[in-house]
Image (tube, rainbow, N blue to C red; front, side, top):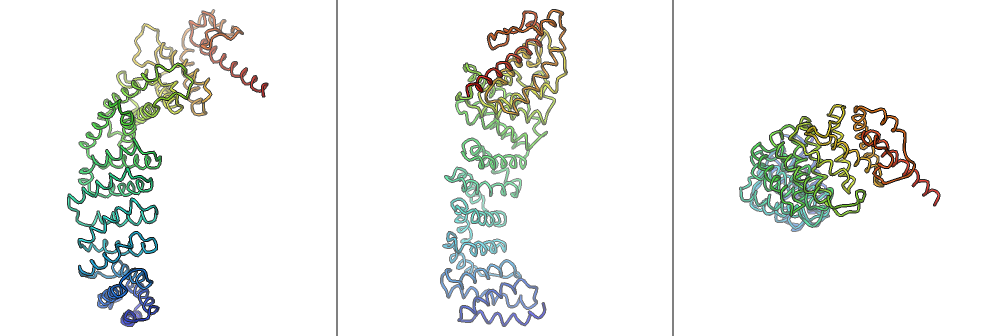
Amino acid sequence: MSRLESMIVAVGNTLYSTNSHVLISGLKTVSGLVKCPLKSLQRSLPVYLRQVLDILKQVGATESEVAQTSLKTLSTILRDGPAIDVKEKDLTFLLELVTPDLEEPSRQNPVFAILRAIVARKFIVPEMYDIMDKVSEIMVTNQSPQVQELCRSVLLQFLLEYPQGKGRLRSQMTFLTKNLSYEYESGRKSVMELLGAVVSKFQAGLVREYADMLFIALVMVLANDDSTKCREIAAHLVKSLVLRLDDQKRTEMISYLHTWSSQHTQPALVRVSSQVYGLMIDSLQTNMSSFISSILADIRGSLEHSAKQFEDIDDDDSMDVDLEWQLPYHALVALAKLIKVFPEIVTQPDGIAWELVVNHLLFPHAWVRIASSRLLGTLFSSAPIQAPPTADVDVPLYPLSSAGMREVATKLCQQLKSEHLDDALSLQTVKNLFFIGRCYASLPFTADSTNDLVQEKEDLGDEEGNENVSSEQQNHPLPWMFSKLSYQTRSALIAKRNRSSAG
């Protein structure tokens, strides 16, 4: 390494050459030398810097190979060499020189290398703020992922390292949140990538100051963006954001959701409130304990509204009905997440509105059906196997009552008839029916009803299954349920044979 000391002056002399090939080779050699721990480098570095700047001034533009190599060498000097002072007028010249190249694909890399080096050294000139505004725009509008990444990298470092007046920072944050609705997906994704870094790296006080702005903007992405990827990123950012907030600010976020959940004239707001409840539960876990009652009340309101819209639908198996499925789906998912964190609420009398969950078992969307069926499965797994109480006994959990269990069994049987049944839903439906069957088996049998269990009429009456059971069987729910399922199985086999014969 010591042998390189003698090269410092010799290499420096090549920077005065008028031959472009010699000049380019000398510049590349300087880039290598400044990375070495040489004693004489500190003394020669200002000379290197001065001459590289003079070369750039002489060529007057950045298109040539000499200019591009000079920029690369200059960025290496600033980034990897010993600390060095740079005059303000030289920084101003340099920034004015490279600004036009920010949007030139063939010349962007050296420009961003220069900017990263300047930001790393914290050189402050007014032009630096102007060029960063330009970088912000390019981060959104440029379609190249590589360029967007370069912009985000230097912009984040600038936001973290440079003095940002309160007004300027607010302007920058407003620019970012405004562009969450940018025309092209790539631009929106780029903004959210930067916001993710901002949320994780900014001081807690700054995150809290801009929490409302960020939260509302991200929720609007969840509600309105037609890109699945953008919605996924926004959901992740919401979870990251609430983790950085204190209890007071989280309470404010919950108050927003509570207000939105009652705005049934704006279905997107109601839907997204349930979705964000679920995201906050995912993120905060047991720290959501103080909000349980509020969340349950809002979920109840959403499910009531959905159930009311569903009441007038006659065809229980139709999946072609134009109903808002995302509202009940996100409400049911949020409820499932709440139960996972706070399992004790499953059996609390004044907790979950189970009758509303039952109301959605035949909702005309597969995701809503499976969500409601799984919730019932959670309830059944928490309940003891015992005979359902008689009708005159008050049961706080509707699906465990005699009437509730009968309604659930009827709707589960109806689910099994659906042409849209998939493996996940069929498995959960069978599990739920198995629990109900075990509860029914706990009821006492009379001798007559036991004998009648195997007596089924061969004529196929109405599809409710009552045609296949005697009056004694109908008094006991287990024969009724088995008869109903048996009838459905026979009907399905007959239909399958008919289709095969027709084919």
